[in-house]
Length: 87
Image (tube, rainbow, N blue to C red; front, side, top):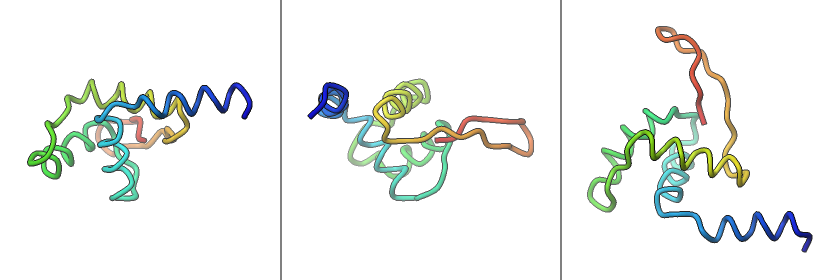
């Protein structure tokens, strides 16, 4: 295994629970969601099992997941607020 692959593997082993929760929400809906949309879904679907993270925490985890290659970022147009990031 080359060094880059080893680094990616090591980073993936140390993902916090919030990163896995975000991945689960993204994969279960199979649609692009903004951090705020992820927060709303977490409030409803995770509240019995896990605390609902703040939007700022979700953004940090999305950045970590993006660095690991687990998610992709896209720019999406919103009808009211202009462009916004979606993962």
